[in-house]
Length: 421
Image (cartoon, rainbow, N blue to C red):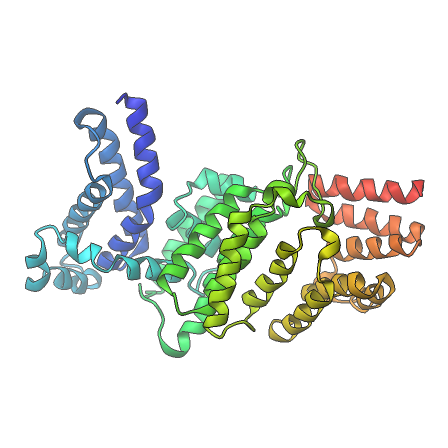
């Protein structure tokens, strides 16, 4: 194996093992910042040794053992410090030491819970949403700072500062490395799911940049969703979110032309939709129903996505059911965006005039004031009603509001089509 082959292997192993390493070390140290630093040190040791010694048979265990030994050294070094004394005492208990001289079993036995603790810690409410997203992608997604910066089109120093501030805040606030229990679980789980879905949405429809979608971000969000589904198998909203992401992701290849031009839902070649992801999503929805969670926020959105997935042709779409599902969603998770989506479904089920009445009722919504899809939807409905001058103005307003270059170009083309009609 050449040095280049070894480095590629290390990169792959790191992507897979980093979250487990950080989670296990964080439980040991009760500090995610130090845990990440020590995991990185183990990676550096691997980069130094493996090209000469060869890749070990179990590279993940090798990294864990190396990182853990450094963690124990760190704990011993800090043993006189009050805030680390308790952790040192815990790790040096006779029972823990007899399981394995290097504590490997103690880390590996509870690894599933450790990952869950890491997810909840990275999404703790003491952090801003930007910090939560950056830290989640770094700790659990294994993305580097430059990769996160590229994904969200922000400067690398900005991402680095968010991660540093997030780790410092967790330490200063003494945020426990644990899964919340009892009444604290539901709101914390909701925050975790929201961050994962935020990452997916940024991948599915990029808010800025030259590309309409970023499939790698969608893949990462789905991977996190699958981790959550494995760790919290009795939570229907977890399965609902995963089902929603899988069904939506099934359309990724059909959403753009070869040159990157966006293709709207009704114009997509549905033969290009990924049937495996659809089957997985529909199976996830069945799981949600078995858990009696069909009326949850993500479950309802997944059910809407499933209506599209089940229609082999756009003309077969059950728009009446979609409108009814949006009406339910408006009760469970009321928002102007849900109402706007409901207006679209109603327009498809009952005609553009009915949809336009609902859209016009949203015109003064403060939350939609700079939301480009409000004038975009209104322009589409006006165009269908033959009110082309008004439609053109709305498409131009929408194009000015979006930060995505592909979407802006599409909207300007629709504005031009109004003139030609």
